[in-house]
Each structure stands twice: as structure tokens, then as C-alpha cells.
Image (cartoon, rainbow, N blue to C red; front, side, top):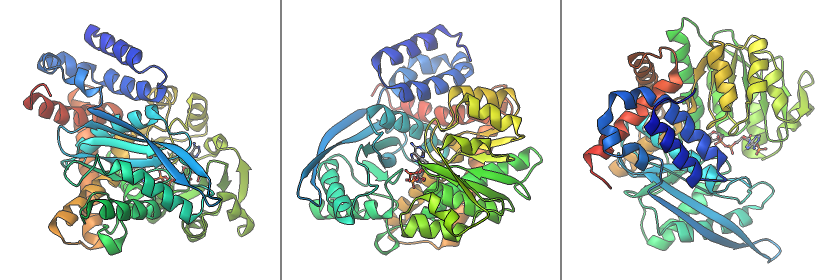
Length: 448
Ligand code: NDP
């Protein structure tokens, strides 16, 4: 989409100059700015208040050394990050990513998206994100613990239950959150809801583990219903085999679909009989093995090296749940050619701009990540509420609230898209609805 508004063109130029070498961040900002053009035309007061100029600059960026000792007694050094992006509507909130590809540009793109996503949940949460280039894969529990303790030793100076509440993301699951929470409690002598995604024995919320995957399917189901369709009898391809992918598979199957493929960063499995999720859970959640092991117990299934090929499998609905930019223009065109008519995003920014253009040009029902995967952070917000109340709700209560939130997110995207003359463009709707709440709060709070 080519921008016409001079103010937005200049703003984007400034962002590009100021954030050189951070293509993912520039990509995320560009997408949002392009869809906000009609809002800016209608709301000169927001330009006057410098809302957008402030919104594209994080409030605070913290970068730190994380030294730890491996099992051979050797000192290892990683780099830690926390970007506190925007606190206009609540304490900073967003996950911690542990993956070798992490650098400041990845954390900034995720933190920027988080601002809009958290706004869409209707809960009072600002946006932030953190992480490290540490790779938990192949490390012993002791190594992961020593890393997490060192990471938290610095991070604890910058977070708190009313300041900034981190959570999980790629590479940060229940084990890592447990080690980080333990170290925070020890250093601060405080038992507070400073992290979400905690274990159920120490303040975690039921249904948090399932929330992002379930929420993705709840959102997608609303989008399908609004367009006279459903999951019933449909063939679904899901990338990844981590937290989001596993629970998206579970819910899509419960809603009547057949999930035929999953992947990890080495390759993908295809099972025409439908994925045996109990086997995947055992492999990934318990044994921490690679997805290719699946085929040794499922003779009808095949394993193919490389991730990209998963998008050549014929399907009705594609749910990318692995990582950013995993569907490029070429893969999107293959999906369309093979009859896929819905793409809904569990991962953050999994589609390149070329892929998104292909969806929009071909009338694909497109559920953008900010809206479609907001169920994880929404349920983290519910975990914070339970921690503050010193109560815990049942699985059914949390799941019902999650469902209600995902329905309201879909309705907000749908209405905003219609109001600004882009009916059916849920990406524009998500950006606009998420933006307006934050923008009003920023304007009301003055130039801070
Ligand atoms: P996990 O670490 O549990 O799983 C990630 C999965 O994606 C793994 O199967 C992993 O394979 C694969 N993957 C990771 N990086 C790559 C890569 N570069 N190329 C190909 N595959 C890759 O993470 P989550 O399931 O929690 O997160 C998945 C996505 O969902 C991320 O984009 C995350 O930001 C997003 N998300 C997560 C939320 C949550 O609540 N967990 C909330 C909202 C969004 P391998 O094991 O080989 O690395």
C-alpha cells in the first residue's frame, strides 16, 4: 500500500533512519502506519499531540550482559534485552524470547506489536518484550537454570507486578518461567505476580498453557462464522510444534477440523490420517525431541527436511504458529493455488508484506497476529487479576473469559474495518482498533 499522507511518509522515513539494521521492526511499523492513514486524516488532534511520533519510539530499552557457567565449568556470555515500549494503558506486558536469532530489532518489533495486541484484549496492559540470544535447545536443566538466574539477576531491577510483567515466548516455557520466578522471589523477597505463565502450584492460571492456541481457534472461528464458514470437516496445516501449535491443533480438532501437518525448525511431518496429538505432546512437552521422531511410530506419516515445504501441502486453512516471516510471497501464492482460503496467525508477524498482499488480493480470510494470537496475553492478564485477588479460577471460568475476549477482539476488528471503509480487512481493523485506545490514553496523559 503506497502512503499519500505527507506526515506519515516523513514519519516512516525517520523510523527507517533511526532504526537501521532492524528490518523486522521497520516491517512491523510500516504495516501499522500504512493502515492508519484514514485514521490520521480524520484525527488531526492525534498528530498535533505527537501520538504517532511517540508511539514508534520505545519508552525504554535495556540491554545487558548475561554471564553463566556451563556444565564443563566454562563461562558463557549471552546478551539480554527488555524493551519497555508503551505504558499508556497499563504496566508493560509481553513475553521473553530465548532463541539464537534474538537481537534488539526482533525484541523491538515484538514489543511494538504487543502494544496494539494488549490494547485489543480490553485489559489494562501496556506493551513490552524481552529475551536473549541464549538457545535452550541441547542445554541441561542445570545450564538453563543458571542462565535464567543470571538473566533475572539483572532483569529484576527493571520489572515488578505494577511496572512490567514478563511471560513466556519462543524458548521460554514453564521450566524457564519457574527458574526466573524463583530467582526474582529470592532477590526481592517478594511473592508477587511479577511473571505470568507460572506453574499451577505457585500462582499460575489454569488454561494459560492452552490460551494462545485455543484463542487463535476462537478468533478464527468467529471470522469463519462471520463469512458463513466453519472448521467442521476442513483440512488444516499448522506450522511449529511448540506451545501455540500444540494447543491450536487440539482446539481445531475439537471444532471438527483435521490437522494434517506440523513442523519444527528442521522440517515438517505430514499425516493424512490427522495428527496424533498425544504423541506430539509426549515428544515435544515431555521428551523434548524433534518432530521427525513422529514418523517412527506412524507409518502413514512422512517427514520432510526444511520448513518452507509445509506450505505446499493442500489445505483449507493455514495456521502459522512458528516464527516471523515464515510465509513469504512465494509460499502464499502456492497456498492460494492449492485452494487455501483462510490464513490465521498464531505466531507473531509470520507473513511477509508480499504474503499479506497475496492474501488480500485473493480474498483470503486473513486473521492478523495482533488480534488472532492475543489470547495468550489476555489470559496472562487474567493470571494477573487472580494473583492480585489471591484467588484462582477454574479452567472453565478462565476458558469462558478467554472465549469472550476473542469474540470481542474479532468484533472490534470487524467494526473498525467497516467504519474506515475497509470491510473484511481485519488487519486494518486490528491496527486501527488497537491504536485508538492507546492514542486516546497518550493524548490524555500529555507529552510524556
Ligand atoms: P515454542 O518455543 O513453544 O515453539 C516454537 C515452535 O516454532 C517450535 O516448534 C520451533 O521449532 C519453531 N520455530 C522457532 N523458531 C523457528 C524458526 N526460526 N524457523 C522455523 N521454526 C521455528 O514457542 P511458542 O509456541 O510459544 O511461540 C510460537 C510463536 O507464537 C512465536 O512467534 C511467538 O512469538 C508467538 N506467540 C506465542 C505466545 C505464547 O503464549 N506462547 C503468545 C502469542 C504469540 P524448534 O523447536 O526447532 O525451535
